[in-house]
Image (cartoon, rainbow, N blue to C red; front, side, top):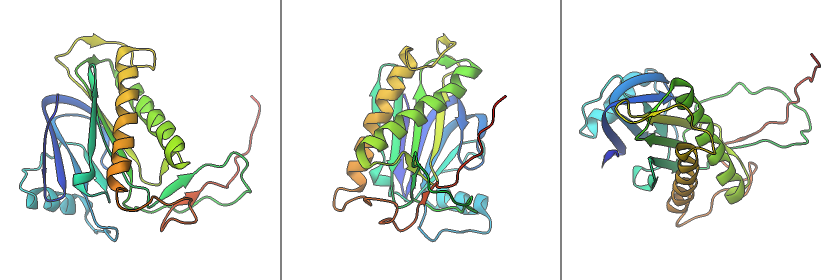
Length: 232
């Protein structure tokens, strides 16, 4: 489905004329021939993110497509893992230096200011189907749900503070109205994300252990703030 090439901390995923929807930096919907995963240092805080990303990609030997989605991660490019099932492929980087826990009985607290912390569980999911607009958007939810379920089972947190999802559809593929968990595309996406995230976790932590809790991590948050519930 995708042609992949890795060089200098960058992975390029190529398929001509693909429709993309990204929740990451400069996200949104677009049509482009490729997407990128770019590894950055833990202290990466450029004044001009766009220029820094372009420099990373071009230094790695690629010609940056300004329309292409970009996923930023602190995970080394050689730890990207992919999985394939039916009409879907998924790729994941699984870094847990900045876990984000969501307790069901929070103690109460304040909202965070937030910051960019590379680490990140990023997921890219592509299908050979031509997804309707709603189905493409829903595939983001399907992928995020599968990522969260996999991480909760593996490490006890649903994600990190900087996760992103990119989904991709083939405008020349068979028209597909839905992408929920009971559909061929949705079920395949769930399986691919599960396998890719698990494999990425094994690759990243082959020689050490992921943090056992937010308290053990270098970065991370626990959402202790409570929301006010109201009736309609």
